[in-house]
Length: 83
Image (cartoon, rainbow, N blue to C red; front, side, top):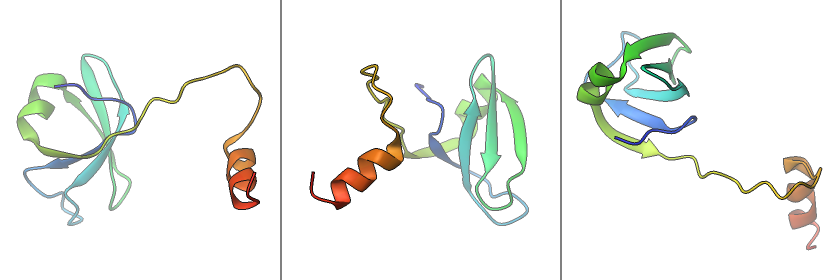
């Protein structure tokens, strides 16, 4: 299973806070996930997490870096101004 930093995954069992959704915050042999309900962080072995995932809700798209110093705020402002 291909996971990326920032992906939102839905697990089969809910967290005690009531949320099913978690954000991937660390990749490696162990995967770090953060609860979207309460912010709790947990490290799970990759195999264990892959068995517990019910669905990948939101996948982060890798942005192309063109070397400019333009920030996300600059792009949003330009879009809102019609540039």
